[in-house]
Amino acid sequence: MSLTDLTDLTNVFVNPTAYADEERFHAACRVLRREHPVVRVESERYRPFWAITRHADVLDVERDNEHFLNAPRPLLVPAEMEARAAAQAGGGQVLRTLIHMDDPDHKAFRGITSSWFLPGRIRSLEDRIRELAVRYIDHMADLGGSCDFVQEVSVGFPLHVILSILGLPEEDFPRMLKLTAELFGSDDDELSRSRDPQEQMAVLLDFFQYFVALTAERRANPTDDLASVIANATIDGQPLNDFDTASYYVIIATAGHDTTSSSIAGGLEALLRHPEELARLRDDPSLGANAVEEIIRWVTPVKEFMRTATEDRTVGDVTIPAGD
Image (cartoon, rainbow, N blue to C red; front, side):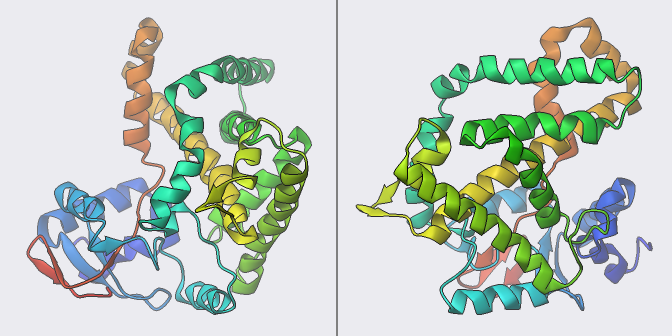
């Protein structure tokens, strides 16, 4: 990669392999922050977009939810998949999670489950979470000194936590893990179901079919889990439709554990690469809470988000046209 060629620099945002090469990714971003902090990215596979790499500019965009909207393009996905999603939306069927929504829908939908994640509720889950943590620590010890930490520990632990909160049966956890990997790993040959965009859309359909059935079950037989809260929720007195309930489940069941497992694995890797920090943590376990915050910052399991300008807006010293 050339650190002087602008195309090479911006290619790190549209080349999936660049996200697996952190030195390359961060080197490119350092140059862009210094010389091209707001830059237009053109690619054969993706529709054009602007890359914003300075912290202050990112915060300005993120906080201005009047002029920079989540909809219609909250994530960077290939143009062909965007076109298929738009065609499905024309037929009234589309994934619409919290990250796709703007106010007033975002506030209303977030309110459905917000009470579940208040400190008191989270404290009530601590015993179950500690029990699961001990289970995975014991499992790692039983493996005899070496293991694939990602597959054996960091994936399973948060998966069990979030799916237990939802109230899904444990025998369905492997299915949820596989679907999550296929959904988020569509550009990864080890994880994707297929490089065929139609097959990739089928992953979402599999999620929807599972959760539509779950909604029907929880409406007929409510329990005290989060799935029942979503299934029986109303907005303005009306129950959610099947696609909105399924979308809600999808964002919790996938993002709820994938980011955490990436942080756990990346955090351990960072500690192994910096043994002096690992020694500090071993010597003083009270540093654990700060270590968690620093691990999330260091790993940054979500590398990007997208917003669309509602009108011409200036970011840094560049004008972002309306609709970009």
